[in-house]
Length: 296
Image 1 (cartoon, rainbow, N blue to C red):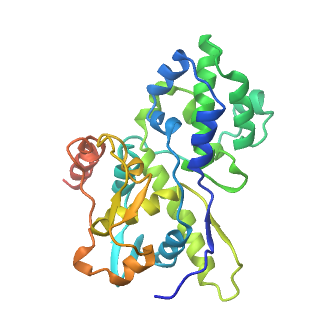
Image 2 (cartoon, rainbow, N blue to C red):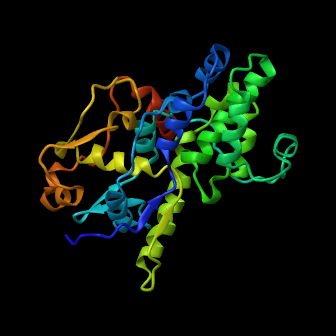
């Protein structure tokens, strides 16, 4: 296999989030307790994880836009909502997340942000100002801004690191954040950006560098999980944590590169479908039940 130049740059920066929360923000007990009630709590404590650009580059090149699958040595391996659920630890059933914002900017956007885009940098400044304040109104605002910060920095990272406007409304009621199918939202947003990046790579006069939005780091983990016979983690992990956290540090079972793994890979060694363990079954069990009821 030819050596690929690092054309693909991911906008997703978990390292920035982990550094910001570890070194800059001090949360009080009230803020911590309310954040724990949301499905995104563990990501406010995400460890240092880096994206492997060469692997990301390879995967984008192997993408099949018609089947939402990666072509690995001639075999189409689907990238599914269930994969996203198992990797992120977010359930893949519930109400659909609508990215459209037909109502326009709401009072929160106008009052807190003067109707301007809600960007990563702006959210960092506001969170620093609100840290440690213990009254109920400020606590809810703080947690709401944390969720928006996670949206802008990696879950739905896009140009200028601004929160997609249609997602702001979902943080109004923190109790209902868990009602939504966030795995499907992350999957659809990322697939849109994979499609776009793949088309740019195929252009004969392509630019030197291509940027991909969305939660692109899960593509690295998707590859590790499907090619597990050639990889191992370097840390003891809590099996109840999202699979993404299992791959904070990655080791090759032999001293090779990712692309060398593909070269040596036998088709029989590819794990075609990821299956949940006992703990993970809660993430997708109801999704399968809903699918089956629709087919009856």
